[in-house]
Length: 403
Ligand SMILES: Cc1cc2nc3c(=O)[nH]c(=O)nc-3n(C[C@H](O)[C@H](O)[C@H](O)COP(=O)(O)O)c2cc1C
Image (cartoon, rainbow, N blue to C red; front, side):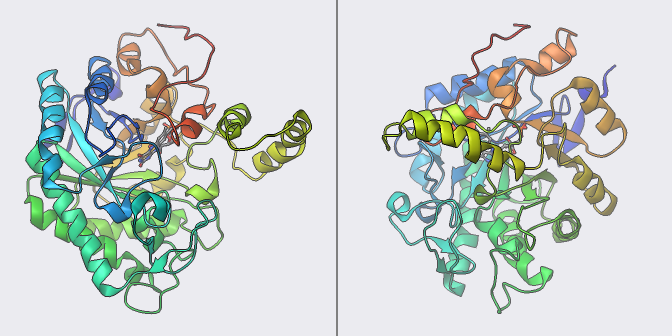
């Protein structure tokens, strides 16, 4: 029997297999961030498709951390609990397990979205969003820590099987961890211990609010493009500190930030999708399009690390040497044999996928039943570009071979 379909535990939660749906912003909540029927149907597809665990797209813990992407799910108020509960109950009824990812977007959003000043460890803007954040005060750090704890408490009340704290991709917590974005000289910056402090505080506060048996996961970056950004050695040490808090049940490993471009979701540079996206905003001519395709796109591609299957695995193997917590690795996992091999080689305990499951929610069953050996996702990244303004779906036109 394939190792992918052997059961394994995250904390007290037993999963029927090693395949996890990685958080992918859905844009399916309503204007206030309430989960909708469409969201349930979307998740139900994964349950029917055989996934071991769903991790939801990121949910905002407070208004100051709201995403600029289309219709972020929110968990910033008790008033939202009944809508979340309705979603979770229905997922449980169809036999699924679901963890809510909780996040504060930090400097990767716009104040026009949040209605509040952007928050970050230091007053340095992100190269993509380009709005200067304010350096957080002690009080604001405390409020955010409490915000995570309260959000986790609401998730538990709604019945989610656990929460995943978003500590990756350039959002607030990861900007504290990275020397590239954290230039503080106080106890929240400088040494690795200091940069980790807010994450440790959040983990402890969350654990205190949800109790010992509830599942708490965290997503961390193994790599950032900037030379002073996160690298796999630092990530391994941070993961060890996460383990030492005794407040976490599993670590998911990813990479990249918004200003890093498509590093986290490696693959194609979605030229056409970006042109379509920009069309309403600028009146570009065919010459501009030609120049972009001929000069700009190859240049951007040159600066990106190439796609290779399981591109965060080298780092996760390092983390596994230092940490006994279950490790989930995301990023470019595409073929069944490869996933089996890396679990057998103990480079990771679980495999999570985002883009392949947008295209084929039933990929786990196809693997199990021998219908497919590899995902048909071509990593064209049109789904990533579209998440700014539209709900989630696969935009790649070529028909699926297997379904
Ligand atoms: C449309 C889209 C939305 C995403 N939204 C999130 C998110 O809300 N939270 C998160 O941690 N990662 C998010 N990601 C990143 C994925 O979880 C994952 O790290 C990345 O896509 C690489 O994995 P893959 O090769 O399996 O797609 C998103 C990815 C995609 C494609």
